[in-house]
Image (cartoon, rainbow, N blue to C red; front, side, top):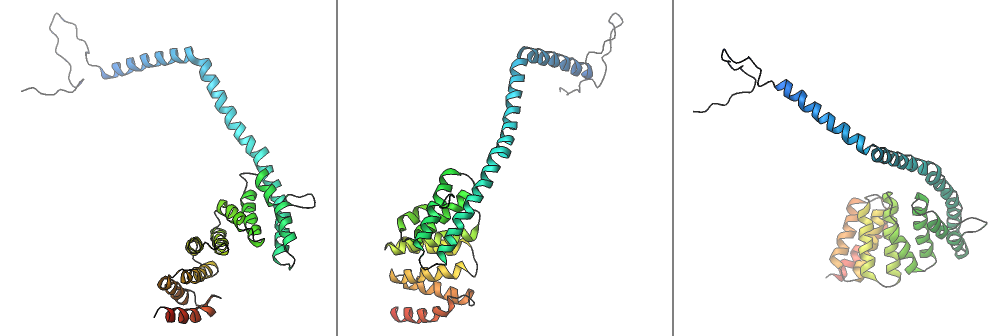
Length: 255
C-alpha cells in the first residue's frame, strides 16, 4: 500500500559511492521561486515603466483635479446658488402672505432686482441643493398660479432627502390633479403623501384629502377606513374637527 510522505520530513540514505545531498529542501525552492519571480517583475517594470509612470500620473492628476474642482468650482457655485435662492424664496414667502400674490409668484419664478428666480436657478445651478429646492419652489408657485400642468411637471422632478418636503410635494401633485379633474391620480398621490412620513402635520391632512376624493370616486369603504385611521391615530390633528361629520355622512351613503 502506498504511503504519502511529507517532503523534507526525512533525508534519503545515500550509498557509500553517492554524496549526501538535500534533495527536498523546501526553503531553497521557495527562495529560488522568489528570485525568479522578482527577476521577471523587475524586467516587466523596466520594460513598461514609462507606461506605469504615465498611468500613475493620470490617476494623480484625476484625483487632484476632482478635489480641486469640488473646492474651487462646485462649492463656490453651490454657495452662489444659495444666495440667489434666498431672494426667490423671499418673493415666494411674500406671495404666500399677500392678497395680490400673482405678481410675486411670477417674481419668485422669474427673478427680480438683478436676482435669479427659481427657473433661472434650476437652469444655471444644476446638481446643487439650491436647484433641488428651486424645483420644489417652482412647482408650488405654479400651483398657486393655477398652472396645474406646470406644477405637476416641476413637483414630479423634485427629489430630496427631506421627508416632510417629499410628502408635501406629493400632496401638492395630488392637489393639482384634483383641480384638473383627474381624481384617480389625485387619490393615488394623496395616499403616497400620507405614506411618505408618519407625522401629525402631513399624514392626517392627506389621509383626509384621500378620503374625500375616494368618496367622490365611490371608494366609500376605503374612505371610511381612512377617516377612522385619523380618528384613532391622530385625534389631536386639525382634521379631527371634520372627521366625525364625514364619517356620519359616508355611513349614511353606505347604507
